Image (tube, rainbow over all chains, first blue to last red; front, top):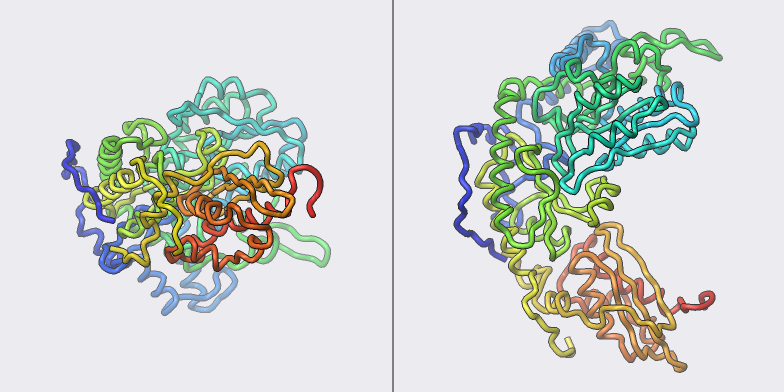
Length: 434
Length: 132
């Protein structure tokens, strides 16, 4: 099936874009799929690709520096420990945390949220206490609280959204009570592209005596973060969504909170002294880093942060805003295509959409045949899709290495799909022996 | 460009998608079953009217989901209307994939086989009372 290139009234401002030569840093983007189709990678909200600089650091660590950290006195252990802790400091600076001890390495956003739900939740939440979430949350910021509710008898409440995918902040005020212990929400919706007013929510939550946890998986990779200015108590994100390796993420928590919390996972490293029948926990951050940590991955995450800083987060944000605006306006030119979420001036760099026909999975399949990688389904937000009245959507999500030409391929192919599958007065042919 | 063999969405499939055979509910159904495909979120329900000889006197399908799941349901019902329960049991998964025509990856085969699975269960699922 071919694409349908049509003239468009939408223009793009190239002065806002990053240089395309950046793509040369990403070996995986240089390939073709399904024969001769250049790979068009638009599934960055699910996971991003790594530049050579990050891959090289992983290789260098394993070829030259690697050993277990913290417990060794020998040369390689010293080297690895130094680099591991240096990576922690890079994260600290990257998110504006006041102390490195407030940065805990975990296996990802999901693990980070689970750590808070167990460690802080079990110790601080009782029957009748309330936790405020939102309708738009990813399952990783819903399910752990459902589990906490089942364990403790706490009540879950959800800030509703408009049909445009914006949080109804007035409803939030109504949901906040003296019983609210925690407000947990995403900084950016992985489906709607909504950018939530986190600082404002935090201010109101604190005024009511509640803590705030932010699922920042979709915001940290794309624009500057300042956890102190945002006023959040807990903050979580993943390395693989920001050019880093798989299997590493971060839990930021304000020092006094983390100090008061009992440990989550138990084992080596997180202890001070162990007897046969009891133990004393280690200081921060080790208290929450049981076992051998993801050493090489943390160091490589540090390299990813170096790369992002070298390109410049402001420049990345400007590039992505221009790309998503271009995509949004071009998609609007297609008949019968419903874009989910807020208008383009208020959204992050992703667009999820629904065609009347065919189903999102068919759309993703047909896009894949043209080399385009998007995601289709419920994107781990089943309650959100219930609220929107759909079972599945197709999502294109951008990062610093995507180009306007890639958007053109996406939009032209989507247009061709819409054209091909729209009702045309087709009839079944009489049944023959096939 | 995918070859005809690779083409997942051949024209006869789109014909069934837009103009399906017996899409709807069957109020006089004697047997009925519904199932989902977790991969795509496809849902297919099949209503059957079996006569005293075990023949499918009438059948309807309803549901929503990907083109493959819905078109294959249409094709299956067109194929099996008027056949017997024994014919249904003899109609294998291989037969279903051959009926569909286009070659499918293992993941998308699940979409095609959803209606086949539902049909296999439907003949054992009377509307009133327990299973046979």
